[in-house]
Every structure is written in C-alpha cells, then in structure tokens.
Length: 216
Image (cartoon, rainbow, N blue to C red; front, top):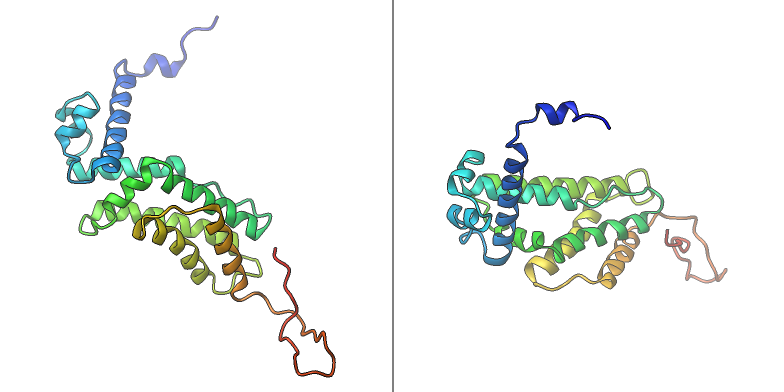
C-alpha cells in the first residue's frame, strides 16, 4: 500500500470543507435565482440556504451580485454544449441546439438566466451573459465555417438563436424537437448554394435558376 500523495500531504486540512461551502453557495444562488428571482437572493438568504454564514460569503465575494455572477458562470460552464462533430452541418446544428435547449429549458440555469436577463445595469451579470452568448455564437460559427452555408453565417446564427431566446424568454413556451428541426431546415434552405441550371422541360420558359439541392 502506498502512502498519501504529495498533494494530499501538502493540502490544508480545511480546504475540502472550504470547497464544499463555496459549491453550496453557488448552488444556493442559482436555485434562488431560478425559484424567486434576483431581489430575493440576498446575502443572508443565500448563506442560510447554503447552511453557512454571511461572513463565509464575504470572504469569497465582495457582494451579492458577484456571487450571483459566479454562480451563473459556473453553471454555464457545466452545461456548455459539446463542440460540433464536423460531420454534417444539419446534424451538428441539431445536436448543438438540442443540448442548448435542454440546458436552458430543463435545468434551473434557464430560469436563473431569465430572472437576470433584464438587469443590463449590472455590469457583472451583463458580462456573464455576454460571455455565454459569445461562446454560443463561436460554436455555431465552427459548424458553418468552411461549408456551403458559410455565406450570411451571422444571420443564420441570429435566426437559430433567436428561435430559442424568443420562445423561452419572450413567449415563455418550450422549444420542441420539431421546432429545432424546422429551424435547421429553414436556415439551411434560405440561401442554398447555387448549382448549374437544370431545365426539366426543354423548350419551356419554366427553367429554374438552380438545381434541387439535397439536404446535407
């Protein structure tokens, strides 16, 4: 049997407990945001929910907003959709959007984000939301880049993310797999790459300006 590892020998004995308190505070902030909103997430309330003290909060963060921002960032990092597989544009989009919708629709994170989405006057919260938006757009760019659908890529991304945000945060309605499928079809069919003109009826004026484009 080997002895304790060097890291375990040198780590302060109180560190595991400190990490548990930090995790409990982050979870308390996220759940309180999701269930009751930003105003209800007072330092005293969050400390009580995490079964610790207000002093434990202030040892880690200077104020409630900093704790809330940290809780959102930690939750977003846990549920970030995977990188695209780069196999098929349509399949990559379906996978990415399905994972994004699951995170925003079926976990407390989505309700927590909705509760702070209007608080643009809070720079720390706005920064976390912008980081998440930037990460989503980057992942979608990685799906579109170097494909036939790279043209108007930013508009395609706006349309896909707009569906998710509008249904979840404006209309307060769920996003279904059928919604995702329809959005993928529409976005990939908006300006499909042109193929050589094919006239199925020679001698007529009904010549299409492009051949049918198979769905990728």
